[in-house]
Amino acid sequence: MDKFIITGGNPLKGTVPISGAKNSAVAILPAALLADSPSIIDNLPDISDIKLLSEMIEYLGGKVNRKGHEICIEANGINSFYPPPECASQMRASYYLIGALLSRFKEAAIAMPGGCNIGVRPIDQHIKGFEALGAKTLIEHGIIKIKADKLIGNHIYFDVVSVGATINLMLAACKAEGTTILENCAKEPHVVDVATFLNGMGANIKGAGTDTIKIIGVQDLHGCRHSVIPDQIEAGTYMVAAAATGGDVVVRGIIPKHLEAVMAKLIEMGVILEEGEDEIRVRTKGRLKAVDVKTLPYPGFPTDMQQLIAVLLALSEGVSIITENVYEGRFKYLDELKKMGVKAKVEGRTAVIEGVERITGAHLVATDLRAGAAMIIAGLAAQGVTEISHIEYIERGYESIEKKLRALGADIKKIK
Image (cartoon, rainbow, N blue to C red; front, side, top):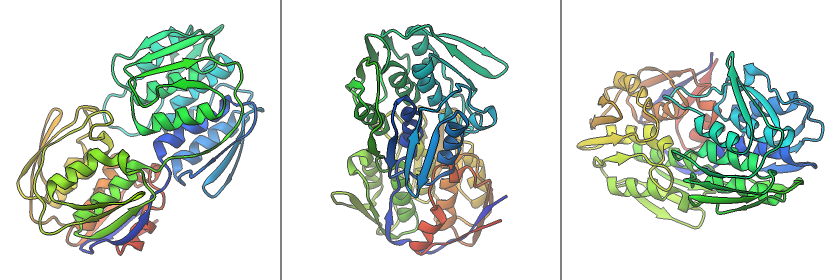
């Protein structure tokens, strides 16, 4: 089992390039299965989730040719609608294969998706949408089986805002007969990115990025070339790391508008930000102050940044309250951070954090992707040595995180 060993106390300084967005890429690869000719996708992050998804596409009969951050997917040879359960059960985003395969074959079967353990993450809104298009669903022995004679456009209202359901229904509906209207949609940048890719393939999707999306079904889709947007959560991670270590870091290759909610909270805490066209410089002067944070769907403060900013709040002056409105099980990591001297109390969906002047290194176990990243930040800011195990969670969503941090002056190494 691999581990990260971090000796804290070094302020991060320099420039860090941001990779392509994980949450876009894991939906765009399944979307490429809808085309009758090859698609080329670049600015792809080099992370384990992409490798796993590529393996599943090849298992189904597709051709995947990857060179660096560019991938070519050819779907003509796909002859199966049942990805290997041992792969599907490892990642949450495997459910996008349902929408893609249902659209292509009118049938899909996939093991219940896995991923990070951050509380209840039902897929009922996905199933509700598929059934509204004419599919029938059966779940048995941990396998979701969905089949339709044909898919027909419909008016679908999501009971809760769901990024996954929004994207999955775009995949399923873009080749359905007639018009589909999706209401109460997620507005995240990666929803827009997937819609842009599908439209580049010949789909007719309007309204992505708003709460209402209109999809006029088309008969055929063709391959296209697409560049994945920058990863806003990776960018936010390095911004918080710079602030937590009292550093001076330029986060480059980003879309600043996607980070407005994060930037607003950092500024409120006293972090100094200088925004450029595709970069943000992050600095601090003195100890930061406590603020309250509430996670919300985009354009609100992202749930994926909750664990990260908690580390910064733990080192700030005063008492902060974090309210988690998206995933109720997303405070488990605080039990690990308490080993470092973090003072936190959890009550349901609320965490009360009392700032301390310093934290110390400890042996930590990553509990999920973003919690693992938060532990890295805590280790960088702590006195002494921090050891983090189960880093396979972290490598699901961060490309070469230890190399990027070392380039900024961090003392971090990966050991077997």
